[in-house]
Length: 195
Image (cartoon, rainbow, N blue to C red; front, side, top):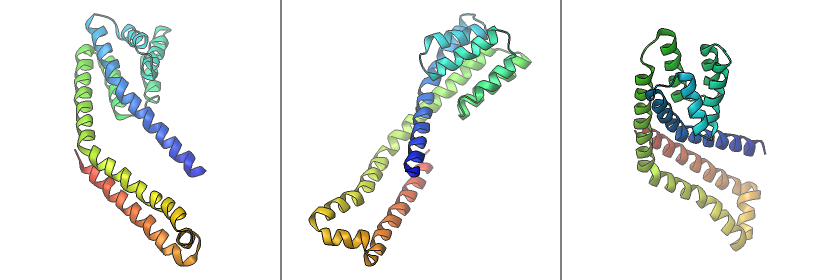
């Protein structure tokens, strides 16, 4: 059960990151539009929070509320960077902090970040399209040993018992396990090299 808990936790983190990457560009678009309309950064944050009904929107709303009651902008932004531990959000928060402390055209900076995020999302979609066949093949290959064991259990119970429970069959079981692991590692390396 500890392994299942770890797998569940990792899957949850992965879903959270996917949700962030899907919603954050929308937040930047809304933020850029609000700032182009002449709103201050605080009111633009508030506007994003009101427009988006998700975690990203809630974070922007929280930032605007803290800034409106007079909390230090640097502290609010630093605290917010811990909410989404992703490179894109850290880059966004760092850029806002630097811009607020030194002054500058925040509207232009937001639009540039938005463009970078849009291009990054397009590249990610392209990468997923290029690797989808390989990922599907890996999932099918992963299922084969499990399906084989289930079929073996019903068609030949004595061979199933030999492979699963007897000392003579253990090398076969471990060979399959190790071969699968090596195969998945190689597939993972190949998918990582796709740009």
